[in-house]
Image 1 (cartoon, one colour):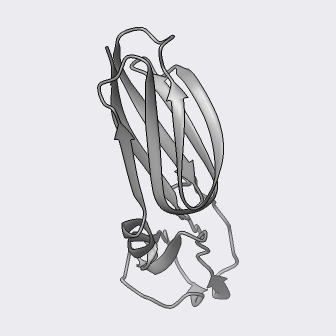
Image 2 (cartoon, helix red, strand yellow):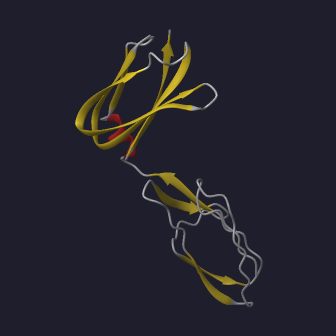
Image 3 (cartoon, one colour):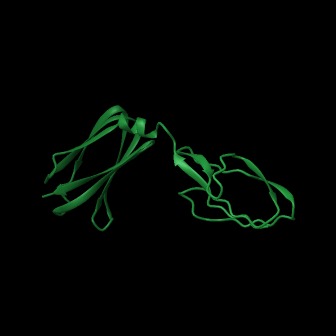
Length: 156
């Protein structure tokens, strides 16, 4: 018997397992901390784990969705970037974020031109020197546990 699955949207792969005919098989879909199992795509079954009898060739694809509450947490978090455009420095102001935050500025070719880390205890700000950057557009990427955001920055 053939079983094939895509465990999540972030992992693209499959596995093929052969079983003797009429063998009872338990399938378990395991999500990471950001997602939860929704259903099996082929038949809409929501049992997880689920047990089937291997009496034919089957393909099973587990469908996952983002956990409730992630957007609620993100809605309490805020990011502002000013002045924008700028020629010397840019201040990144963060609200509602706790823990280590990584600030990365990349140019339009995707090359990382600035990388800094700041520890936030709810609200914090970081001023980044951009006077050494060429005029043009950049992306400021903010990464922390439970919050990721990108803003456009123009250096003049």
